[in-house]
Image (cartoon, rainbow, N blue to C red; front, side, top):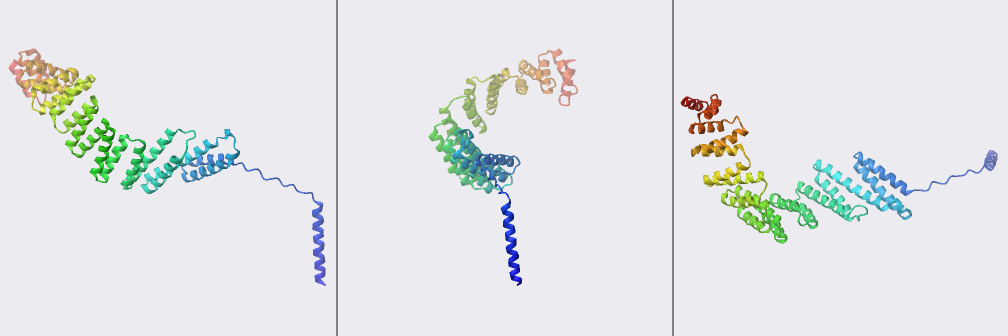
Length: 393
């Protein structure tokens, strides 16, 4: 009996609910807004830039990658003014730049393997990208920068052979890049300790290029390693390819550094013959004079030191000349060059005593007293000056 009543009650409730529903108005459901991948792409790109500016590099990369997917989705229906290709390029380059920055952070923390991974990712983006607004030259610069960074990071992680492969890739792009050749040379010479391979790099380059700069690089490499004979050969080969002031300077410096004074003077004379500016010519003559001094040729030494001072009245050189003439009792020359010194350095007691003595020897006692009286209290020459002054009285 109870079950019948319960079923009747349930049936009544169902009828009531159906009745209530039938009396309500029909509810209109608003359609979902149409998805706009272009707008979403721009939002993702902006979010990526904000994350990058905040130093949140990993988050920035995720946002830029999301933007790439959305720009690609929007491409089929996008208008030309939406610049889809340009935006895709910007996102790709942003990702590459962010990996470079992450690599730099890893370098700072000395986590070189991680830095290499980031640089490799950036390099792959640059190598596989077809320029849109960026020029190919700009893109190539990015590639070269990544390769150089990879070489440095590999070198820092003691993977020297890997560093060489990156330098080789750079040289494929710029066969005459002296900096890269030098870098490769020093990795082979100093890190791998393989002089044969190291100098072969420079020899091959010089032979193929037949370029003076290549032979200079080779010469400098041999000079630094102490192989003076091979360095000289390379310098002389370079001179046959380019005879100018710079070359003469390099070769003269090489010979001076190795105490080959006569050979150095040959090239300093060649340099002087190019008529360099006065300040350079004065230095050239001074160096020739110093070289003659090393050769114990005092007359030639003084000849060139005088040429130097006549161009540029250097008090140091003038004092040296005055001292020489004092030794040979050429009093007028002593006075001439001591006066040059005193014009620049009135308190130079060495020049003052030289001139005072020269005046005394010439019996120009008034001039001698004027110089010597300024030295009576001098700790170095005071006694000598007082003795001469007593002799004058």
